[in-house]
Structure formats: structure tokens, C-alpha cells
Length: 592
Image (cartoon, rainbow, N blue to C red; front, side, top):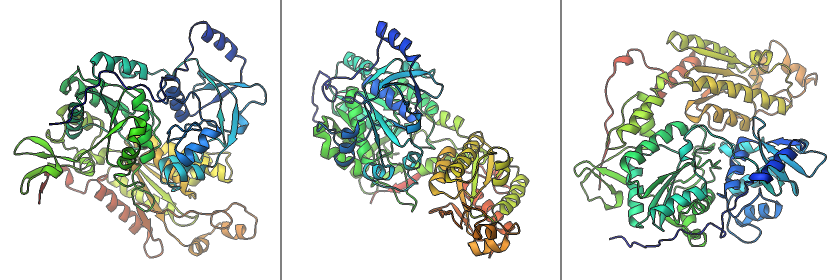
């Protein structure tokens, strides 16, 4: 029997009350009229998510973007200046040049210049991206998705009182987008003081269904299924697909008297253990006093050396340490497996020796089922979810892919890319080739070779490549792309699963020997400045998918090496493979 605790009142918000920054009525009309005369600052998608959650109280007790005192103490101690535990900095980065030279108030507007809020400027302070990354994320590795983004943020943070005139408007799943006050109202109607919150940025399968139902039953309370639909890890399943699945599950398989589905427009930081505490605070503000913590919670995957950024149980340990102070009890995500003979799920540590168990890893879901167009088994996921995923994610040989060549000038990128283009066209793939020189003639005409212009050029290529790959095309890029952080930003734009970095590893001496245009010689004489490999650095990829040797192997041999890799990953079907109808076997493990 579970030790059930009955508590009929919802836990109070973190700090005692929900912040509400939204103005209405005559005050709003007066501020809208005044806003027409104020300077405007356009904020990023991430800052817009933060501003929305500040406005509706999801970040209570915060009532503004952090000032310097709060910011500094959060970085070093995970606490606000008044001592309250708060693990993640919530700040507004802007370029100093974007701030007005007159007036103490500014408009905060979205990408379409819609007025969202008026800020009273009270603090402007500089910040150090490397220091913040090291203290909050525990790393400065540019493979972390937030770090490569931070390099493009404004160089100062701005803080001050906020008057929010209107929240961002959404056209999708409007009935599921609830403020903390609205979520609390719905939970109060259910009549259970104990509430378990479940955070997710992935599709929910039977194992998640079983876990969440057990958790709610254990505390004799309600269940808040609270998926993130703001900014998650690049390459995640899009929220449109996920929410269709969540809704199908909740409507068909959960108790409506105990279950609430609500969407959270959060911009995740992928900060692992610290972020787990932040998620718990946010859920407390929505009325939850229990929070399910998963394995590698809010983890961004592997670093540049192929190792996980965070340990699998670091978040659970940190929640156990601070749960009492937060007022939110952690519920650890236990590993469940399916018992086919009993047709039920069980915790793996309760399996008897010799029992048959079925399990499918996340990698197997992607590689053995979705990538090959095979239907996921019903014991693993509900048919409604399997159908949605199969509809949105065709077999990998029908998916888009980006082949990103990088290397010094003269390394052989373009030559190998041209051979590869012919080989892929022969196999029926439609190809878009974005060669560095061609791109600079058209897409990036007018840009120079300063580090800033180089970054702009590569990010333009990354954006175009991402759009082509997202719509099922094959795109080959062949540009020097010298900076590691910018290549990682391009990877984010394309998506981790579709981005294949190809390092053309040719020594600079060989590149100079091949240089029929004499560019290296001119750079050595100082006639060309900012030349990669001479007076501007080339940052070697730390863990590329493919490395090519152009001295020992010809361009054709290297191109065929890439073709073999694409076949291995499933982006190309081997000749004659189209009639292969074999089905994967469920992973079967006998407990020992």
C-alpha cells in the first residue's frame, strides 16, 4: 500500500502569491497611447517566452527581468538577492546600440513589432557569456545548444518595472493554453490538494502513461500533464505533433476528473540539474506540490567529445537536496519494462529472475521503427500516438538531410561535394548545392570577411539548409565555416538528426600547394587580411560525423565513403533494399 497523504488545499505559489504584470482597462488604454511616443526594442523569441511567463506569474516571485544583484547571486549561489532559492537567471539581453539615448521607458516588441510591454529602465549592466555558461550550465562547450546561442545575445542586460499590455497571441491549441491562475482554478475544481506535475518535451508512450497514473494514485491527487511548447532542444519533435498525441492520450486513457493537460510556453535552457529545480518552481506556481523527475532531466545530450553534459541522476539528486525548501516533493522516474506474459508494466528492480521483459530504447524508436517506416508495437505506445508519429515522420530515406562540408580553403570541399552530388542524383536524391563562393555571390553579397560577417554568412547558409532539409530535401553545403560555435548554431537550425558534419582534413601546407589563385601567398605577404589559416583561426571540429583525408584518397573515394555512411544511417536505401519487408524484433531481455 502507498502512504497516501490527503491535503485538500493547493500549495500556495512560490513566494506566497502569483505575480500578475498584465494591465487592463483605462490604464492599458493610456499606456497604449503613450507607447506610440516611446522608443521600441525588439526582443528575441526566447525573451518573449520569458516575458510571457513573467507576466502571468509562472516565474513568481520574479516580477521583472533580473537586476544585477539578483543575477549575480543566482549565478553563484542559486538564490535571489533576498535569499530565496532560484537556480536560473531570467534576464533580458539587448545591444547597447538598441537602447535609446533619451527617455527612461522603452517598448518591448516581438519579431513583428507588436507592442508587448513597457519597461521602466532602472538597470543596464554588462555580462560575460563564458562566465554565465560555466556557472549555470557547468560547461563552455559550444556543442551545448544554449552556449552557441548566447554568443549572439546582446552585450548588456536590462531590468526594470514592467507593464504588460498584451500577451503573445497563438492560433493553435488555444483551449489548452492556460495561465497559472487558470490551471489552479481547474485543479481546485478537481478537489485534490495533492497535485503531481509531469514535464515533457517528447511524445508520451505507454511507459509515461503508466508512470504518471501511478504517481497520481500514490499521492491520491490530481495529475497535471504540462508539456513545454516554447523553445526546447533543437531537433525535438515539434509541439504540434506532440500536442496532438497528448490530447489523444488524455481524452481516451486518463481519468478526466483527476487529469489536466495544459501547455507551457517555456524557453528551456537545457541546464540539467539547475533546470530541474526551476521546473519545480514553475509547477508549484501552477499548483503542483509533487514533480516527476526523469533520467537526465533537461539534458541537452552529448558534448563535443561524445560524453553526456550531465550525469543521468544529477537532477534527481539536486531535487532531493532542495525539494523541502521548494515545497515540491520529487517523484523519481523509475525504469519500467513490459511483461508480455502478464501484459503489464513493472519496475525493473522488481523483476524476478527468468521473467521475459520487453523494452525499446529511444534510439531504437528512432532507428529501428520511425527511420524505417515501421509501426511501433501497441504494448509500447498507443495506436493513436504511433499513427501520428508515422504520419509526421516518414522513413529516413524520405527525410531531408544536410551534408555540411567544412575545411580550409583549398582542402577539397567543393570538389568532393560536386562528385557527391552526381552520386546522389544517380540514386534518385534531389540535391541543392550551396557552395561558399556561389552563396557569397548571391545570398551573402555585400558581406566582408570580418568574424561578424563570416558568422552572418554561415548562419544564412544554415537557415536555408535547415528549411530545405525540413521539407525533405538533400542539401550539400561547402563553405569554410571556420568557427565552431557558428557551425553548432547551423546544426541547431538544421536539427541534430539531419545534420552531418564532414571535416575535410587537409593540412594547410597541401592547401597552399593546391592554391592556383595565389590567395595564401597574398595573405602571407599581408595583401589579404583575415584569411582563414593565416591570420584568422580555423577551429577544427571536435566530433564530426565524417572526417575525410584528401591526400591518401581521391575525391571520388571520399564521396563514396559519404554515400556508404548515408546508407548506414538510412538516408539512402542500398540498391535492392526497397523490397525488404522484414520487421524489427522487440528487444527481449531476461532478468538475471
